[in-house]
Image: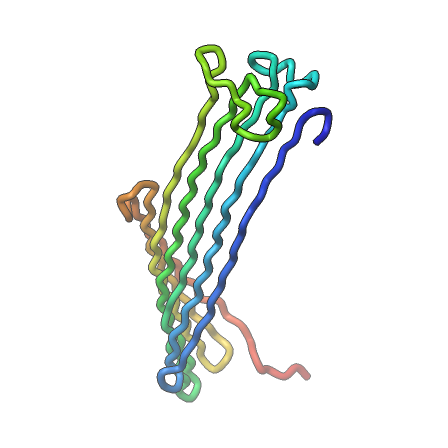
Length: 198
């Protein structure tokens, strides 16, 4: 406690990740990557009613408040890749599905007119017409589902042609895929590989 006030946060946090890959046949592989981030936080603020800063609060007798926050995030990417080489020709095709999900919710209150005999407890709060606690909270929920395709062709380890495609569907409400968009790219860089320089 510093100058009659204290601000504390207790947090439980878990991060989990899983990466898996399996080759079905030679050149054909499936893979998946998944991650979860979960956080649960409890906040507490106490302003001593006998301190100077406590006398500056509503009602002049300190304040006590608590808040609860929960955040959950999920990332999942799964796909299939096929590679093949025929003489001077090298092919690679990949397709992926990516899912992103985020959920957050919070709630807090702050009460005034504290009983100095009961520090750091909601029991000390005076609840009356003149000492109404303040309450706040929020909730958010969003998701994105993406489809991606990538192709590569290399000739004689020198010339490479690549192409990619991506389709995104996003939601900021309980209804998935509320908006959607797409993008594609095509490039044909040239390079010299495995060439000796005399």
